[in-house]
Length: 285
Image 1: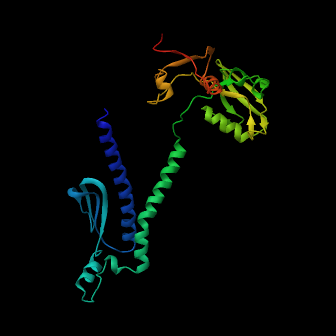
Image 2: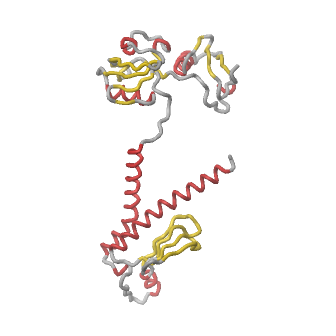
Image 3: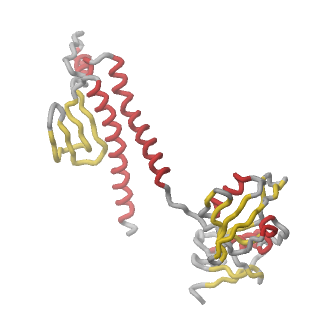
């Protein structure tokens, strides 16, 4: 599979390039037809023609090499040939590119990049309208008192508990913990009703964030409730020398139990100046 990955990546790049160039050339094609310029050929790809169809004055082609495409307009090489001959005569034929007024030729040239911009806008709009996958830990919380020892936080005073899954903050629906952080920041120090799932029971609690003058942001007093499982270990890192492996679950740091990733990082950061002993669970043992 590792050998095929570059092949698939290369094919993907070629397909994307062909789509982008085809849309670009389609802009030139449509503008040329509007300006009265004959288009002799419109091709997807380059090289040997695999399939051709000519319902009128334009021949549509599919070529062997998926390297973009081209739009061949009548007389587009006439000026270059006249300059090479240096005889001072140049009479563009009817329906040719240089037979069109200069302002129309400018529009034909601009139509290519304009079509790419329009395509990017439409694609972005469709992606936003249809939604996109969300990544990150779910909006399940752990109280700060179980991580850094803070007590009487807005979360505790509101009645939140470790393990609660937050569904919404006010009218803002949340799916991940990052969504929850954004909702808290957007709401500011104002009170908001949090809807949450506690073991299958749906609750609504009013949370009043506390503005922190040091951090310059509203504070609730929660961390993500995520299992402290090692995702990756960088080669040559301290973790690698210490024997940690991907998939290990951290159980304790210097004998102090940790129940979440937040608790692990808090305890590890507090003891960065000394060696640490970490207890892990590996392979279910």
